[in-house]
Length: 357
Image 1 (spheres, rainbow, N blue to C red):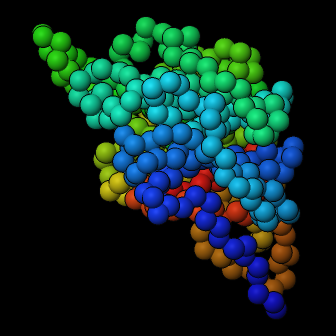
Image 2 (cartoon, rainbow, N blue to C red):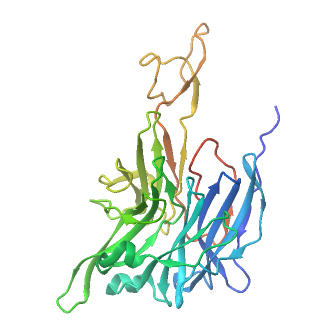
Image 3 (cartoon, one colour):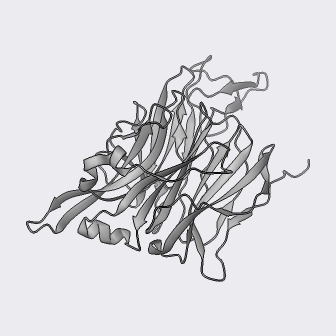
């Protein structure tokens, strides 16, 4: 039996000798042209306050892996004057062919910590679009007032993802996000307390208008990623995997496509690294399972034993498909200075793994 072939691991963005560093990656697959788009922040140093512009590399998918990557390009239009661009969150509308790139911009070198402590929010919600799969981009649109409005005064700051957005079968577009909500202030206006909460921006008209859903209740959550768990009957559940300060990732479910999330739950099996933030999620169809026909549910088994079942020699070996769609979540550390991509594509899935970085 020959050995299995694993594609080579490719370094997409690597720290330069000048100190320029690439952080906070996001990966998006465009099935219409078999392209994989990799975005990242270009920073003057590893410091968040030294973020500068956003960059892009496009890869061509052959079969189940990426064979060729184009040179890196700086997205000059994805910027606001006197602001730094951060947290790229790409999203593709399969109905219109529009590629969205959401991101935040922050005034000057203002650190996130300063905004959290003082409540002085200098972050903006921005977006650029592409009609040619990322070859050219529109000018940046500042959506802060239109989408968030007066509520922005209740947020010390906010950000997106990190990672990509998703589109549901209904057509709804979703962008994962989190905000530091101002819970109370002291009498003289000095900030007293803020708490982070994950939520989602969404659009039901192909990006013409955007709204934001409710915060995940009961637990403090920050950076987050989304995936839709689609069932064969057409229903779906939205799964959110979020960072927390409690030592483990938090998961939350939404049954109304992201407008409202049920209470978050700590997941002890998903240990949060000391400096982690990026929890990639993979959505995939229910896998085929090889084994004997289950006794409890001969036609549509909903669960399977964790150990390999014992089979009598006369018992037929059949192929069964699990009923429930499954999701997997991973976490990674922000300390990695290189952004790598093991570009093996899942088959039959509308979601792809987010790049770990």
